Length: 399
Image (cartoon, rainbow, N blue to C red; front, side):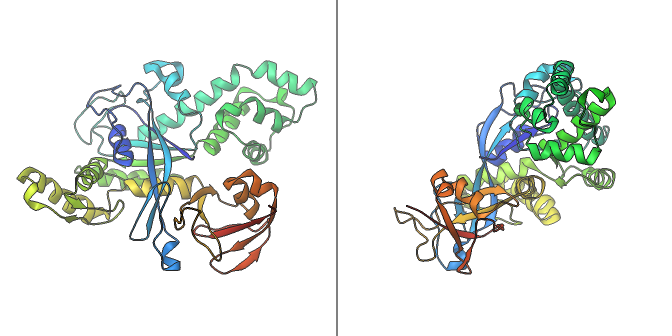
């Protein structure tokens, strides 16, 4: 399952964001290092369900579907707050960075209101520049990668040279723990025009290489949290102008969590990512709760269009992570053996073929692949046919 890592310094709303995504019981507090062991949970990416195309109602085995909006599970990990010098072990930083090794995409939570300083301590709103947090995380992650490489680099580079090994394959194999693929390492060589003789690399070359590899293996999306605090909106505008390479999404994790919890209790009707909610049981809400909902409606939903939390997850998966979603199904039968309609929806890398999808479902389908059928158009496609988000694909194989 796709893994999203939730990162950032202490006290910026990381655990609130994580809980808003997963409704897991993450500890939330207004002081550094509330989270020590990483929290794991399931969040959901929101997509248009194929059931609407066929005029049926699906029965997901995992996740859920509301009004033809399918919520597909993704795994999430919330690591403890990182502080400057984390790569050197400050604030248990090495342990927290290691927790991120298998993450496919990082969601960097920052305090857009500037009310948390570099150590994660509360300060006056707008007194700290959140741009520093974006630069800080880049530096920590780059140095983390660099240190991992430097521990073995002299011996490793000499071995690759002496044994005439393929440097791309050797680096991929040596650093599998960082989740790097051979294609990603190859792209780094090509984009930086690097020598294949690793012994010719100086420290600057190695640093440039690991920085680019980090960007490819641990792409980042920025969740600009606390957007409803006065002044945060101007900060977010400035951040977007300064960091044009990043997706920066305004977020109010606290509002999303409040709406999700009220919805879970049956007090309101709320679909994550939507711009409104409906109060179902006003008599069970006290004045304080009603005022809180009114505040969220006026200052968050009406102003920004959503709390931003669902948008962050979706963009993390589809835009930053470059994934698509595909349903298995049959031309004559959309149900499984138990009668469940379109029970599965898979997240697979963009550019995946029909054969890749067959292997994703089960190795037997890939090994015995004959052809695939695009169920919506009823067209037969070959193993090299590239799939698109929302496709419903039937795999025909030798039984």
